[in-house]
Length: 101
Image 1 (cartoon, rainbow, N blue to C red):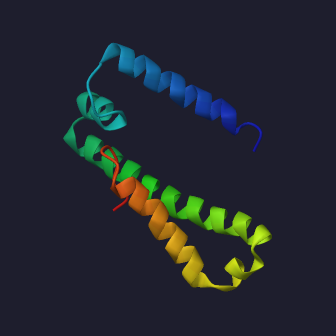
Image 2: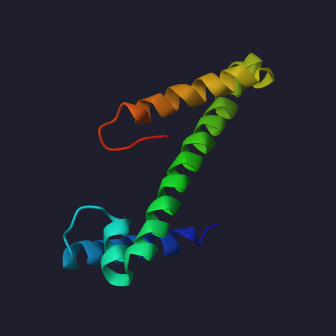
């Protein structure tokens, strides 16, 4: 677990170098599409989208777990977990740049 930052730093440096070399909008999708073609770009875009949705759900569940220490009744009700998850996703949905679904 302590070595995860090494991979993270390497990927950030890789994306920074790609952004400097090819300053198009689109992030990882645009870089993969220009380097490997449309199909690889499509796969990267869908994988990135799915990881964002999974992260949205994971962060919401973790938040309810941490909040359950302060308010023990939250852990007993699945509805509270869903309501907080929905609120979190709506914040992303109203954003100009990202969608949760």
